[in-house]
Length: 280
Image (cartoon, rainbow, N blue to C red; front, side, top):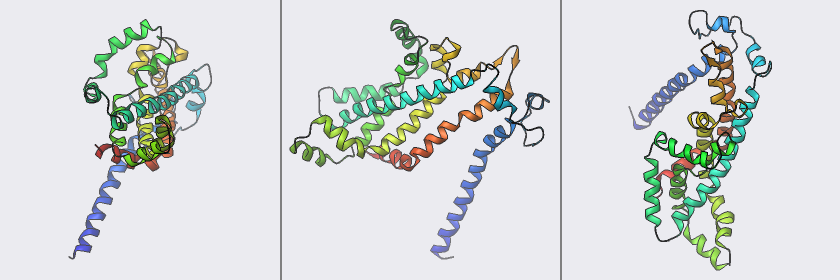
């Protein structure tokens, strides 16, 4: 077998392998989507009965979560507002901090970078109590901002933007300064457009984290009207009745914004992750 034939055989094996992986990845999503169209009596016939059966399917579950006094739409809107604001604010502040740490030489630069790396190693569960005390002191309990504040500047995003900014051409900085451009002008008019792949990658990762964040909103929010979608869906399971039909339907709808976000930024996602991970 010649070299070209071996390469084709390896490519065919890899393609087959990834197709099998894709099927395994899609299988739970397809199963839960089909189950979301079934009534609760069908779902709970023998425990939790998730199957590929197409019997007794209807849109009643989806109609019910948007009507009959349900606050599902309010939870959905809360999650969209919080996730949108977290993405915008996190990208803005984290990119500024990461860019400054990569480009400018100032006292304590490396100490600050070590602190960022150190903060990456601290589990969030350890920080919950002091963060909660801080939110109480700032009177931000049961508010949107109380959920968003700990996520506005992420150590992961700062580290990622720093690594990406280290690979930016420094000659552009010197040229812009000679032409009289301010430091803010250099960032917003020259460097920020070059960091678009990094923004796209972090927009997806930050959005995914914020949308699925359950523990912190559960601690901060008290009012049912301010629940985010993960917290609100969790309240459907109670000691007095488990609304699995509504839970499954609501969960299926909850993946739509993340899919849309990925398709918007997927063009730059892989290149942004690759560039941010190897520069430095």
